[in-house]
Amino acid sequence: QGSRQRVAPYLHPLYATPDDLLSIDLGSLYPELRNLRLRGRVEGRRVVPYAARNEIERGTTALAGKELLWVDDAVEAFFLQIQGSGRIRLPDGSTTRVGYADQNGHPYRPIGRWLVEQGELARDQVSMQSIKQWASANPARLQELLSQNPSYVFFRELPDSNAGPIGAQGVALTNERSLAIDPRTTPLGTPVFLSTTRPDNGQPLNRLMMAQDTGGAIRGAVRADLFWGSGPQAGELAGRMRQQGRLWLLWPVGSQPPGATQ
Image (cartoon, rainbow, N blue to C red; front, side, top):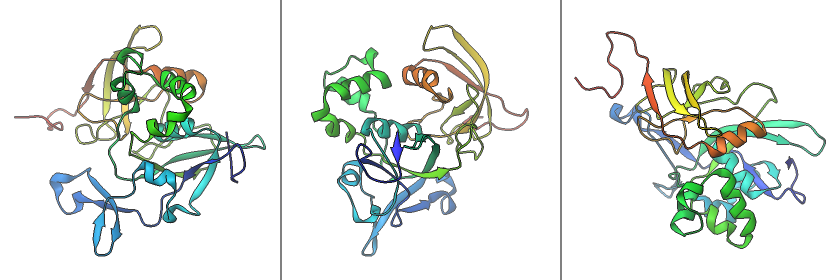
């Protein structure tokens, strides 16, 4: 739920990319660092790290006027950043979409892991739903919780559409057929056969997918996020998805797949 003006209960901003954020493609200078990007800002004659989440949420001059929308729930805004895209329902009943534009350059840190380390949740209890329940029950510690993840995502507004969100490949994602992967090991556009289980009933889930998106938490050759779609049912599945699985890249005969050794 959101608004284009800051008026109660819409008090939590979604920001567009700030003007002082630098994004440097390291692969253009060092081919061995392809798919790596350095983000920061200029301070004097030096490039320094960009502000972390807790600094941004306290308010910085560079972000003044960069508010795309205001939403009514800080926790929902946080998970919107993790998902990288979403729909905002405005007070007049219309909706608009936001998509990933950029990121502050800080590493993603899972807040669920912090809750486990603090003894607040058992490891097997961690899900989007259980984190939201803890946040609702502990409002005085909400900022402490969210600040454990210094990564911060900036958005761009997209025309409203029934199509899926735009992934890193530049095309709309398809429900239950698009995967987010680590592009250092799985090139975007690669067909990938997935073998795992469903989070709701444990039944086998074996199907051909397409590598069409990336994410700050997705690191490693056998790590992927499955796009379930939009709406409450998809959100329920996505929030509980933490299954073990196997991936097979389908690669043309005679060419060398990424990460392979002779």
